[in-house]
Image (cartoon, rainbow, N blue to C red; front, side):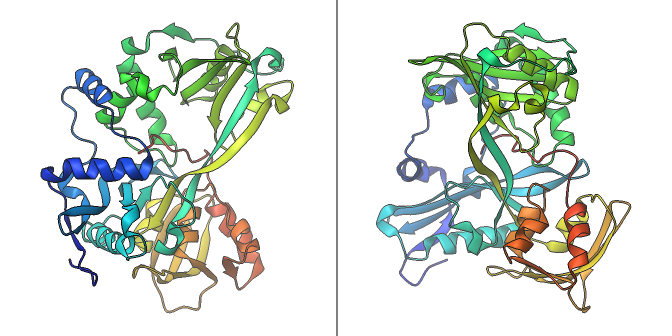
Length: 408
């Protein structure tokens, strides 16, 4: 494909590797670390590349690569403990020398054409900036809260569970147990993806390049969960960074947090929690779990409205007609959504719409983290009959918070 300004789009080849690395390093301020790659291959010698080179799209100006986007098929858990194959996009970059030339739009047009041809009902990615992707039909769909806990004063309520069962372990010795627990957790948690060996390899390679100045990984293991953490020696006192805490059960969650908050000599514990994580309600003083930041961890675009909406489960019955506007592709239209006992049927219809919304808003609602009532208050979702708003909000809700399984 050739753009009007002479820039050409094509699939990447192995010969492009060096130029792609230079472009993406410039865009994100970090180069791929060869020590991490080598160590990852030692741990998982049979791993496949996270992204196949030929699946990437590059924009070329003469002999120079000035744009890049890569993708892979990911298995995503959606509400109701179901899974959907989604297109996962990463490393979206345009050279700073080639801004405002339509390169990003052209690459996204081609990427979405390929995704539609592969009949993937969803596209997901982790966005570096929040102002760009709404015009392409994406909405934030998973939220993360960065919290700090002053460990010195953290006490558990007498009524808080104290199930025990946590072991202090060497992370390298329990990789297979951790992978098994993650997969159990993945199957019941919206937003979590099947995790390939290349991602596990990067995590357990644990090279200095990925430690942000902290120590090597430490680990606690429970039959139904695990915590991976590292120490940071700060001027104001020792801190612990919780790199991952995964708990299949509430008992594992309580047991792991009791252990983390029992670490001697530690002043502060830093972690990432979902909106409704129960940790504050286990403590005598919930204010000790202080939110320092809140970000959108995952963005989602619905590629096929009937396929996507019929793939997930719902919290209550519905019979509504949705008018969905798609500013970028042709996935919009008017659709009847009928839910009975959590199971949905969705198909195009000529009935009068009950609800009007953008496809980006539908993407935000999809995993249950963003409620319909908030978008209605912002006039980004309109209901003809106000009595429809409550059941719409309830139906798209979930029993478990949506979480990003692994960053890509």
